[in-house]
Length: 200
Length: 200
DNA sequence: GTCTATAGTTTGATAGAC
DNA sequence: GTCTATCAAACTATAGAC
Image (cartoon, rainbow over the protein chains, first blue to last red):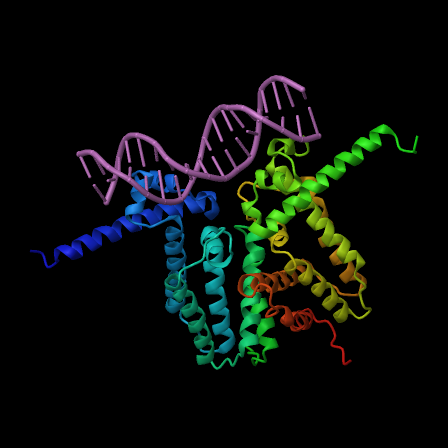
């Protein structure tokens, strides 16, 4: 024996199969848009027949759901890996840039995470959990840098960042027209919530 | 004779038929989402058979295109009807509020105008024209109030407003959570571009 | 777990009679 | 201009053999 029980083997193989399916789904979504994803196309990429997908996912929406969940989990990981400077403004800039880069790196992912674009799709509680965690940890990170922000302040923050992301995708995809306004936007926001300026 | 030539009659009748079709299309789009619009459903509402639509529109995308065009034309009309206060800040507030209310009043219209949500749909040059005009006239209105804004300033402005609209739709549809931040957001922006404060 | 076969819909679009 | 009839294709999902 090699230190793995039979059941673990089975679980691993199932997980690998799921991963392959999700990878194929992401590829299709990126090429043709999230809304244009079809089971046949996904199955073709994996090298199996469409009905075989149902051995791994209950429905097409279940695939969307898994994609939704792992997208927010990815963001969570990226956020946790980001090293935040001590100073509040600098920390805010890094947080915003981290999110902006993440959201503008993949249109399919962005549409799935942030825009309700698939008719009838609602994320499950389980897939939605990392989304909540991501926002919570973001607020905590701000608090840890002494940024006192009430609910309205947070809403304004998300609106500013979301606005830049959306304009970037809608009017200059692949470019940097709104991305290069990010630092300025953060300073604008920081001024508004009364964060002290830094003269560095 | 009644002062109308026969050809005018025909044009009127055609225009009326087109209007009925577009009205039905809007109804369906509002009920089930823009992406879920089908020709059969539209035809049913009009009281004709689906193939008859092709006497008035070349394709489904042609219907989307007409809807896109008239949405921006509507915004243009609304903007022109808005009375702007003399003071720059107050004018900016009215402009922003006018757009925000327009964009949050109708999700289907918003998705069609501002989000690329229909796979393969690209507005024609003719339908896109009012969109360009709307932005141009907005900039002119700002200039007329003495608001000197370069390209980056304008981009930041559209990002802030678009951000509020998108967050409102994504996280509080029908509510006012981001709508009530609009005046504050405009002041934040006005401070950033150096508009003098008013003590009224 | 994967396959074949197929059910059961729904879709956009065309042909041709009236 | 509207109709009937229909095409050709696509889709999600299920049943049952292997």
